[in-house]
Length: 376
Image (cartoon, rainbow, N blue to C red; front, side, top):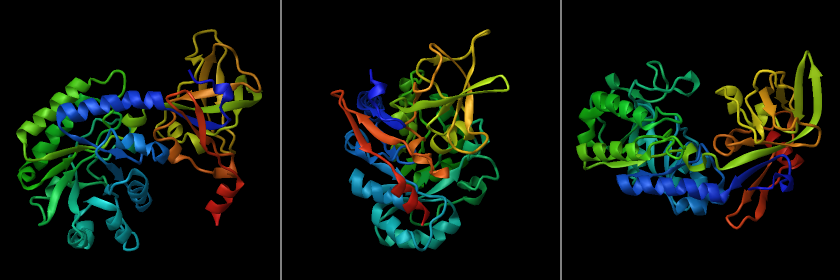
């Protein structure tokens, strides 16, 4: 167990042993199902762990020039790149760093596709299966008016040179969600599958969650391969690689009691450092805390930026918090570090790794210059 009192505060902490546990599951799926599983940097771009990820994946996927360059320079291969929009300024660098490029629309394909083909890049189109089990609209790209992907009605045939199809409609989903999505995908785009060489099933396959049935996922993927034996099948999970692999360590700096509410004021911010908790929204787990039961004292956690809504709650604690105590938020590696901001110039959490031998290494500290240099 990590000694959180020895971790600087605030700090994101990744545990290599927990990461390796996830990588074993991913290896099992990719080998048993005969598919390629690539790392989605959108969930975690912590390049210090790329050497380990590279041993247990088939590449990496990028959503921007910066991510594509990071894949090339730090992961050590060219990226599978998809972005909703490419620009004239960015596309030359996108091509340099990518061996697969997926286009979001026919307009983008017509604008950039020929150049990508001349550079030997395998090109694909993102399609919209018009089906998703994701309940939160913010994370559901499959609505009829979605800006992401080409509707079936607009794609009766494939443009010459297109080698792949890509869909991404899942979010922390289970095998049944993929099975239903594949039904919609095949119904609307199955006539195109004999013409392509690969299908990218996107991310959202949360195969490392405790309640996820990876055997069912393997069965679904094997079935799809049997129906289309000529296809390369690619999955690009983000959260699955770093699911439940680390924490955000904070400190109680003040106790405020107003309007009958107890608030522990922290040296981290939900708005700046954990924005998904407000966007999704969801309430993260805290080590040593639980859902309040009737009669228990309730505690709200308050962030350190000036946004009035920078708080979450409520929790009950095994030992009630006081100034100087550590508050440790669970599962804070995927889709957390990559979405942080420096709003208000608040202190940015450091980044640390607990290696398999138990040694704590602080790999990044942030200070005034990081804030200054981002502004101008």
